Image (cartoon, rainbow, N blue to C red; front, side, top):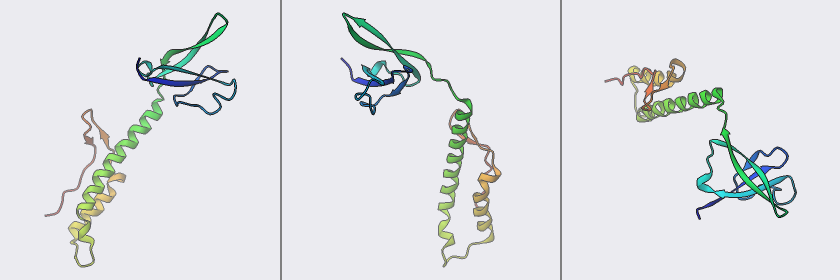
Amino acid sequence: MGQQLTITFEKETKKWCSTASWCPSSHDNDSYVSLEIEESDWDPEFEYTYTEKTVDGEVTYIAVKGDKWPIDEEEEKRKKDEHVQIVMRQKRDELLRETDWMSNSDVTMSSAWKTYRQNLRDIPENSTPSIDENNNLLGVDWPEKPA
């Protein structure tokens, strides 16, 4: 027998509410139903409900795999856009860190380097980034380092 997973449902709606080993109040009242399934049978991309089966007067609950969770396309786009912004800012921040030493009080930074660093700071406002299928950042015009 494989690893067991406890899943808990609201009794009134028969909707899944938890895959934790214990759901608050699930064992304290009749509002919840908890049951165990094989962990290998659980797929988080799907909704689950349960059915009741009575055998010799004893009620047994059986998990039933339903449809895939609906995809919120706006939320997926928001997450993707947020990820792209994070990737772009990480690269930009890395390039800025490489030249941070130039801003020390004992170093005179040339106007070319000041412009380069300012252009890096302006990247988020001046870019429309995206990521291709190979996870490469596109749509960002990175400034060239001065000689």
